[in-house]
Amino acid sequence: MMVFAIACSWFGLTIAEVSVADLEKRFAAGRDTVYVVNFWATWCKPCVEELPAFDKLSRAEANNPVVVLLVSVDSPNDRNAKVETFLRKKGFSCETAMLNESNPHIWIDKVDPSWSGAIPATLFVSQGKRLFKEQEFTYRILDSTFNTFREQSK
Amino acid sequence: MNQNSTRACVAKFCVLLAIVLQMVSPVQAQNPLAPDGIKIGDQAPDFTLKSVDGKLVGLRSFVESKGVILVFTCNHCPYSVKYEDRIIELHNKYASKGFPVLAVNPNDSTVEPKDSYTMMQERAAEKKFLFPYLVDETQAIARKYGARRTPQVFVLLRTRTGWTVEYIGAIDDNPDDAGKAESKFVEDAVDALLNGAKPETATTKAIGCTIKWKKG
Image: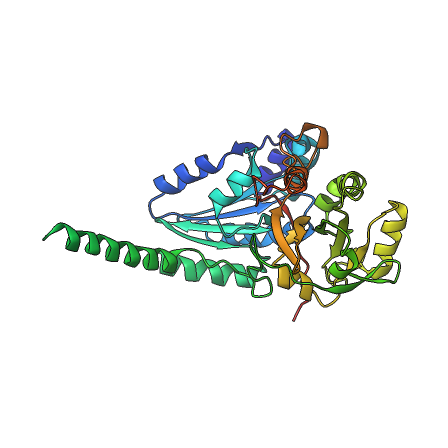
């Protein structure tokens, strides 16, 4: 584990890009998988503060069909200097990606019509069911929200 | 079944479907502190808040204007900072045409110390704001308007009986680079209103910072 983390930081990190359509395709193919998608940015203090809770959830659910995905909405200009550097330093074990969308007025509604665009925001998806939360999470609240959602979407 | 009763059935089904859809559609206000607020065409609630120069300012202070560009913004949010110069430019361009900017900071300064009244005064002086920068200390105004993030703009038009909400959303579609914005939503909305028309795009969404609501 330690060796792996060191190797990761040694070889650097190239973050994947993802569009809302890519996410939807993945949700549709995921069958019983529970997806927890957190929208964040390096400049957003409450986002950065809650990221470890998402990483912890991902590690706690490592043996279950659960995907925790951290999607950065940082500007593409900040990709190398900010996002990748930040993630390399943090060494999260969960999946990370950068959002590849250009028109917020369209893609924010596609993620969820109730979303104002404020971050942090988190989308839970499983078997066609969705739960969207425009709020900050502590690990305790994230874990209970996740478990209630998983139970209800079975 | 004759045609009329089929039609009635279809109508009933549609009503039922609408009810069901309403039940399964996501709850609009996840945060009980940030309700849906006002919509386009609604009467804009009046208010009186303290500005950085100590004066009390509200919509009533603008009875001679055609409207107001009400911006919920703050000191600390990097997205607000990105848009700061554009907010200043909006005021420079439209105040003389009858649409001045009115900035309101809704954040709780115990949650975000950079948004304290003193820091607001400093920022306003530093950036030489020519528009009022008000503190929404109880957050009642942000709640009444249903503001959810900073920056978020409400373009208000003065009517004979008060103020109506004509645009809600982002300033433009490029937070990183004003020069590369393809749509300047607020300018387009105000230009339309100045021409006696309604804004073509009346609501937009954008990434921003959550409003820092009081805890507990």
